[in-house]
Image (cartoon, rainbow, N blue to C red; front, side, top):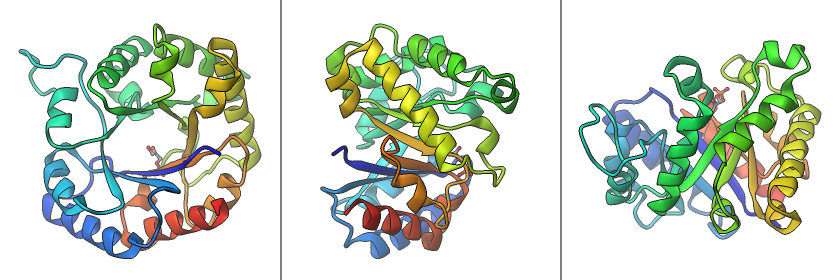
Length: 257
Ligand code: 13P
């Protein structure tokens, strides 16, 4: 069975002091969740990565970043490289989040460059894909997912892809309170896995973890995680308090036991 992965994407929330407080709360509440059964990942903003990383030393929680650039170093004002993330013990990195695609000009091509750089640096990329409401209503969901994955994963060989996590995040379900039904999420994620079979092979596709993201809450995690192609969650708003993220992780781990 694929190992469950629950990640909290804190987006542009939390000062350093608030971030440390949240990380400490989660460490305290989640210490008993076995790290060989479930990956629990916290993705604070860049400014709090180091400090949160220190809180997480010797814990069962892991550190992730929300984005990265594709060069190791250079005159790229404002960017942070995969090598710099490794330098502060970051293990995971979100790539191609829909908010970056929507507001900051992220494209499938830049996702592809970032993905290659992240893998090259030994990070575990969480590659986000998902359709907008207009695309869903226009019957284009599968076409959009196929394009994002074929272009985003271009040139990634079998050995590389096994280390990648994919997050299906329908844009219309992010921060809107409108969760995709578990049937909608399962349908899209099954489509993604079948596409991975075509792009790689059955064995590889069976190994790749696919998270669902979009208004995940303590109330809906159990039914989502019971679906055969949903291997975890990428949580936004509900990852910002100890209570709700703890409840999500605990429910997910109960279902997966
Ligand atoms: P919400 O859980 O706030 O809908 O955000 C989802 C998301 O974008 C996680 O990356």
